[in-house]
Amino acid sequence: MNAHMTGMENDLSSEVRELNLAYLLLAQKMIRNNPLMAQVQLGLPESAMDKLQNMSFTQAVRVASTPMVMCSMRFDDEKLWNVATDSKRDPKLVGLHTAILSVCQPVVNE
Image (cartoon, rainbow, N blue to C red):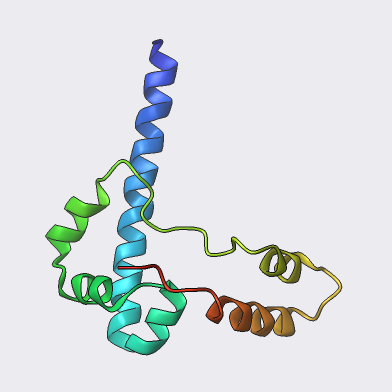
């Protein structure tokens, strides 16, 4: 493996870690702010919500270091993509319609 690839992999690993930490900290803030809304927006079961809420910063940093992206794309439905990318719709209505369709998405199983 050449040095360029190794450097690129290290950059990606660092970016994944930063994304994971940002996601965990945002999720904790959302849970503290409004647990029910956070559960709908994050699509997480109560057990995961409890773990996130009680996680210390040190634990969040450790968990964020996993080599996998922790957050998942919730737009796995073609209707969601069509609504979100339709440039002819009013942006305010797009956000509302997308939120309504997202709420209909199932919560990740425990």
